[in-house]
Length: 420
Image (cartoon, rainbow, N blue to C red):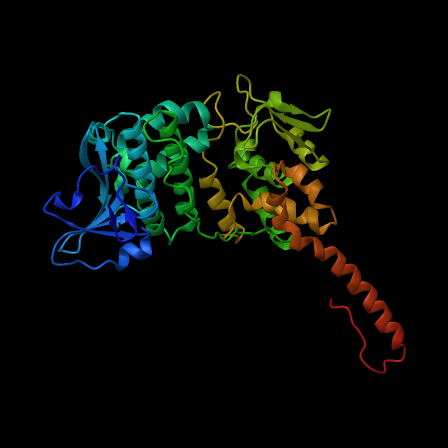
């Protein structure tokens, strides 16, 4: 028989379904978000069936509440399997779930048993605990693990910690991400942690394959900070470092090496003498943010290493107050030093930017700068591309100055005078 344009096939509906559950009226539509949003309640509950996926439907109750379901025969009995309420679950996900239910029925499995497993499944909090215990220590560097733990503790558990892992949908992730919009960098890092964690949930069979709810959530744009020191600022910093040498010699050495090498803080702060080869003018790091890394040393860096005393029984270049340990707090001396040098807006990482920017200003190509910095991807170095024009502009300025002054040898017309 036909209802609208939808056909009730014998293997699906052997009897008139209008008598089911209070005789809900039956309509045929193409189920989509736009269509379901527009559905109006009637005087009785209305069932709308999809004209493409047989058995997939949406019920509109007289109260206006809408919910997705599948109506199919199972072991000779026509049964309704509820998927979830419209709004809390997207139309796209409802269609996917409907296909899963229909597939399970075709294989002789009862999807209701799957719903019982959902009720008994673990929460996001439990997933977080397992993720931090079984995945992070073995697949992440110490600094990454620290950030993962921070994201989990501050942003993930408070928001969705009590939600069942299998029940998390894209909307949940989108809402969490949007609430952090005032701190876009942190929002994007948290989204990244969630994506890795739910991918691992799939690997542990805690979610269906290819069901990562983070897929499709758009990251916020981040403004890269590009602060670097001018020659005058470097002179002020240099004078301050000289004054601090007796008080904080290890911190001063660390800062100078950061400037001379363009290294990341952790690469110098935790540097061991066994990694330094002054004869070959290299530092050979067995591990770094981008893996095994070679750092090439200029003469200033070599002389700084030569001036730095080696402490017996301490393998580190930048030694701390505890025997055998490196200086683990560089922020405190740096805040004091930058304040004395009137550079309070400068971060330690800006010393790395300074190394790169001065290299570009000297006319060095971005591939060379990227190699010196140890960038694994060329687009990371590309942030300095706008600086590459400076040497060219300087040459153009000198040429135009010479030509302009030649055109006006007697001072008639505009004459370029080089600023003092």
